[in-house]
Amino acid sequence: MSEQDDRTVGTVGTTGDAGGAVPAGAGTPGAGPAELDAVMDRLTAKVAGLMNIGVSEIDPEEELMDQGLDSVRLVEVVSFLREQGYRADFADLAEDSSLSAWRELLEDLGEDLGD
Image (cartoon, rainbow, N blue to C red; front, side, top):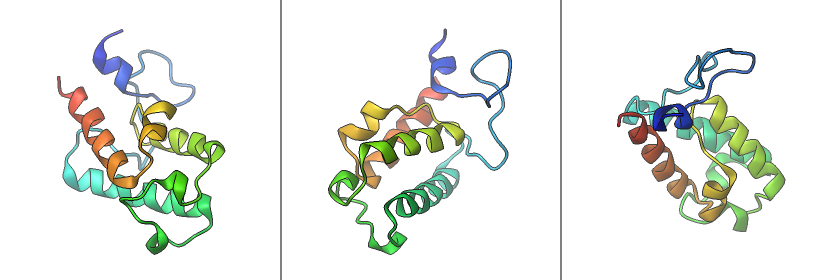
């Protein structure tokens, strides 16, 4: 499997390579800063919903695990990001669970697709 295939995710039920279609409305990794901003907005809203708090209550520099996100909900974040087309994994997200760190991770994952 190539580096690119390892970093992209197809939709459930899609046959063929792992770089298949992503769900409607999903982000395209490596599409640019505006798309990453949109993904981050959706991610922040998702996390806020999982934590039952408002978006404005999240400190993007502080670990989300310290703000109330637990490992069960982190699994939901992984699924959400995969639906957005990013091949994020639990260990990477748990290593530094701040939104700012996750943005850097998604930037890196998107850049890897261009190699």
